[in-house]
Length: 176
Image (cartoon, rainbow, N blue to C red; front, side, top):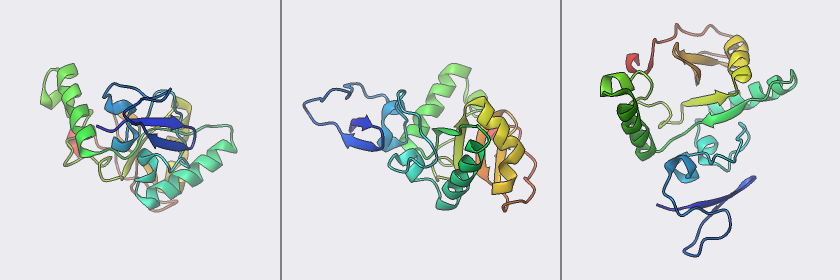
């Protein structure tokens, strides 16, 4: 698995000799190439050098960028906590969910399979902090952004036209 050195706005591959800032671990949560976001990085919808943002569906990314600009004008900071993910990363998240919740059925309420995950196809984004979630829940439909699952206030997809009505939320990821 390739490692990356993350400098604000730049993602560089780590080489055999590890420069400062490169990790010798294989934590996909820290691997930008798989859609991971290093813990010391705060992504915005404009940080397209990171695959988690850059590999989002362009229409979704554009809607997020416009929403983030308007939210910022109201002192609300929208950050991307998860965006596009590789199939391997999504599978790892599902396996962690099974371990955490005790069964595939329970895990599926929070984590979709790689074949069904809208994150894998670049059509979903998780945002934070909670203030940003609240703002998008109230104003997201103005941009076509809708909270997809009732149990995930941070998960948004482009599910309507700007200014349209969001469809009813699904109860959880397993319902999708």
